[in-house]
Image (cartoon, one colour):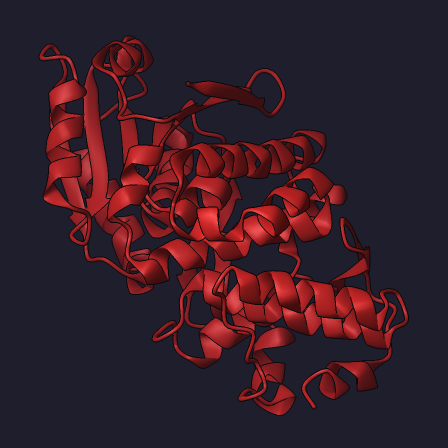
Length: 356
């Protein structure tokens, strides 16, 4: 059964629709009703069937164009950004037209940033096809590309017009991609959502077997959590910062690996354990809570082995993070499971101690 969540504030409020089946022609036609031309941005890693299915849903009266990026984080770049902009200009797109992001987080982030920039803003629709993009990057209006100095350093806050989340896409995800998404799901349980924490604790085997009923509940609770936070704080001036739990260290791990060999979700999981270790060292959470955090992560089949990284190796990337303000590093730590907060007040020695 379809579930709907409204995200954001007027005039840029938008609907996220969670469907337990493929997107219907009637729903899609309604979403595209006011547009003339459509550019679908996707990548060459997406199953061809998904693109073919979306093309069939677009009314014949619309002119449809496809822009295909190379799969992978490397395409989240100025080069991709520029190539789509030039394509839109050559096709004479205007504000009566729209973009569709069909794919994972990379596709959504680049497409959203293009939409925010072309003609100072045209509409775009998100169709995330990975668990990670469904529960995270497609919701909240953050768009970005990477540059050599770090991840997501260039971008804009720009809301989509609509987000379609179909659980049907999750059937073909690789185990690695699926578990990458679980990393972000578990984050919501740790920072704010006690109900989600309980669901994951009680149903880890059903989650791992991709039971659709449980997944629908997990995705709904995850997006509800993110929606609550980003609606209160659209531009990360306050509570939204807690969504970065694990990300300072996770992004550093990704950058250290040159965005190869480890997924975003896997890196964030390791970052959450490091942040939890620091929360323990700072006397916010107990040893029992720290063990509970590690236990839930392990029960979901996620790796918790971050000890192969040294703080000294990650430090340059950590200090180049967006969370550095006025020369001080801000961390998201836990007061308890289900309650996170931002602080720049911690012992620097605990950063390196957490890696020992």
